[in-house]
Length: 535
Image (cartoon, rainbow, N blue to C red):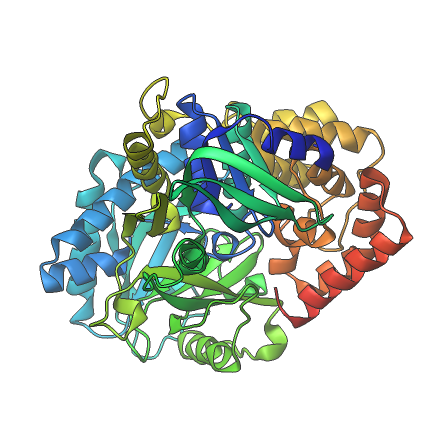
C-alpha cells in the first residue's frame, strides 16, 4: 500500500482499538480484534517484529524449565504456564502448518542419577500435553545417542532422553498474523511512531504519531488504546503517566548461528544445565546451527547487540558439549533479543522470573499487556481483547475465533510441495523453501519468478530476487534492512551473505518503490551499518 493511502486509512473514521506494537503480542491482538468484527489499527515504530519477536530461539513450546520449577517449588502458576503453552503449541502447529512443525530434541546426560530425573520430567511434559502431544519421550542408550550426534563429547556420557517440541519461523509468523489481520479488515503500519496520547476529559481517546519514513504527522482516534510494545512497555506507560512505576525487568538472550556441521538437520540438543544452571539449545535452523540462549539483565535498547561475555559463554559451552573445535571464526551471525519479564522485586536473577503475562488498565484508560512468550501470544491476545471489550464498551460481532483460525498461507500448506515444483518448473529445494516460507502464497512468488526474477539473491542460500519484489509488493517491506533481516531472515543467518546481497536488494527495491539515487544511498548506508554493527 502506498503511504498516502495508508495515512488516509489511519486518519479517517475512529477505530474501536488502536494497538501500539507490531510484535507477536500486538499482531495477535490486531488479528483477534479484527476477526471479531472490530475496527482496528496497529502502529509499529520500527519494522514489524524488528525487536524481540524476530530474535527468539525459534521454539514453540510449553517450557521444560518452567515445568522443573513448577515441580520443585510446587508452583501452580508455573504448571498453568506449561499447560497453556502446550495447548497453544498445538494451535500454532495446526493454524500455520507451513511455518511450524515438530522437532526432535535430545538431552545428553553425563550422570547416572540424571537419567531417571530428566526422563520422568519429560514424561510429565508429555502427560500435560495430553492428546495434543507430539510424540512420547524415550530413553536413549549411550551408543544410540552417539549415533544420532557423533560430534557429542563421549567421555562420561551415560545416555540421553529424546523428546518432541515445536519449531517455527518467528518473524514469518508475526508477518502472517498481520497479513491475516489485514484480510479481516485491520489497518497496519510499520515505521509509524506514537509520539503522544490524545485526551478528552482526562481519558485517552487516540494517539498522535509520526511517519518515520517521510516525517508526516498523524492523528488517530479510537475508543481504546492498547500498549503491546514488549520491552518498551514502560516507555509508553510513562507517556500516559510520567510517574508510573516500572512493570518490567528486561533480560537479553543472545544467539549464535554456526555452520550446519554442529547439529544434524533432523534433531536438536537441549543442554539441561550449564555452569550457572541455565538451559542451552543447539538446534537445526534453515540449514544452519542455532545456539542459544543467554539470560542476562539488560537495559532497553532499540538495537541490542551481543556482548563479548555472552558470546564467550555460548562458545565455552559448545566446546564442552562437542568434540569439534569452535571459535569466533565459525560464527556466521550473532544477535540479541530483549525479553519483557514481569517484575518481581524479590528476584534479582531474571532467569527465574515467570514468563506469564499481565494486563493493566491505567486511570486514563491505557490498557497494557506485557510479559508472556511467543508460544502463548494467541492466549495473551484473547485475554487483552476480552478486557478491551469490557472496559472500552466495544460491541464485537462475536467471540474470539483465533483458536481455530487458519492463517494466511495455511489453506494449501499441507499440500505436496513437489506438485508446486512441477507446476512452475522449480528445483525441489527452491520449491520446498518457498512452500515453507509462504504456504499457498508461494504462488505469488512463483509468478514473479516467471517474470524474470528467479535469480538467487545470495550464494549458498535459497533466497531469490523474486522474494525481494514480493516483500515490497505484498508484505509491507519499506527498507532494505526490512527485507534482509526479516522478510528473508538472511541477516540473522549469514551476515556476510546479507552484505553481499545488499546492492542487488537496494536495486530491486528502488525499481519497485521508486527510490531516487539519494534514497538508495541512504538505504544502503543504514543496512550496512546494521549488518556490520549488529542488528
